[in-house]
Length: 216
Ligand SMILES: C[S@@+](CC[C@H](N)C(=O)[O-])C[C@H]1O[C@@H](n2cnc3c(N)ncnc32)[C@H](O)[C@@H]1O
Image 1 (cartoon, rainbow, N blue to C red):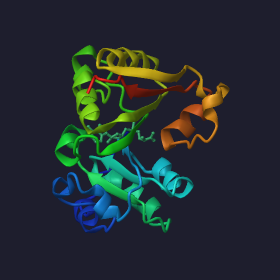
Image 2: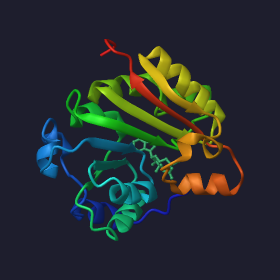
Image 3: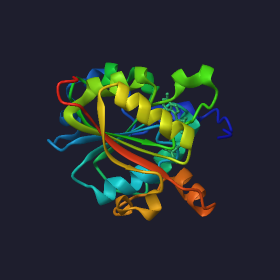
């Protein structure tokens, strides 16, 4: 993704009411922030926010949190969020690296990973959001019966993710190498990247995983 730097973006992000600044102070208290007992779903690498600003409308009984590290990109997600009246949507301007500093053990119900950067070079594998070092963090913050949902156009990232998940104590519950010709397409909300790849006729890879019991 080419990013045009915007000097005002940092300030605009910090001042936006949907951005939770100092998220570490909410560790263990996220339900208090939302003022309800609804499940917490994260979208990691939320990008320009098309998915999450639709998901908060179609799933109003979920507390949605989008995590994005690039302020210019987050600003675009915030502009989309501004067009909804949802009270169940917040954003974190941070690196996914810090996830377990921000959420307590078992505080998160579901993690969505949509079209994460594939980092194709082997020496960059550690940067992939499904590298086992990230999966360990996700396992810490997920409930024992929580889920990871992954969609990608990238076969190498998909195969890598399946391997890493299985080696990190996750069980694959749903799996397809062609989401749009599978039963899992029902209720699917497309992301910006997804729309582009589908328009080009690329297959979309999809999986749903859960921590193996006792692997916590
Ligand atoms: C390829 S884009 C996909 C965006 C969106 N999920 C979609 O499907 O349209 C990946 C996004 O993840 C963000 N990202 C990548 N690594 C990240 C990290 N470690 N922490 C937070 N955001 C990250 C990037 O800045 C980018 O906006």
